[in-house]
Image (cartoon, rainbow, N blue to C red; front, top):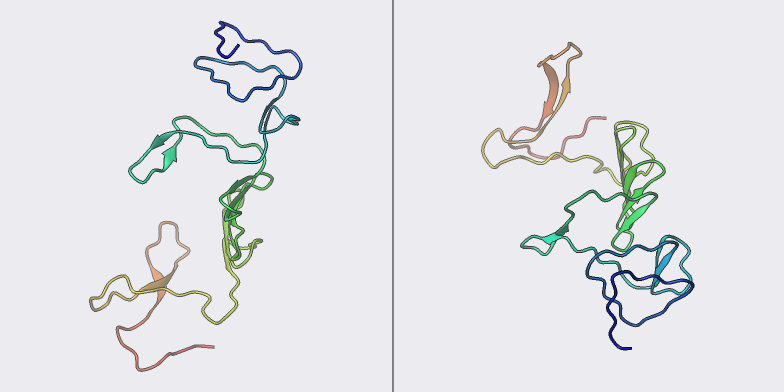
Length: 171
């Protein structure tokens, strides 16, 4: 038949259809393949994309109303963001190295194996740049090293003057 209505649907063995609509609940005991006739996991997807519909904002970005659990690795886009389930890190795999390691709290820029809280491995002399935060006098960015005292507020700082005649490098 072209159309069928049933309260419960049970399939034993292999079943194939070109179109199936489930408007209530469905339970699959075993494996379910979409786009494949040989599912190897509880849910196996053949070639194509998986679209999970959520609530979209004005930009068309979908959000989940519940939690999403991914056991293992998750790749977003064409390998641009990669979440590694074995060490709980987030990495940029599309060329430049950027990694955030959740377990150690480390951030690596230019390296995927940071050994400090922030490690920068540069390919040129511009490893770190702090830009001005405004256009008014005194709005140059600064670098502060805080004192050891608990809740201390004193620091040693480095800050660029508003105007310099040429580049200055301390070696």
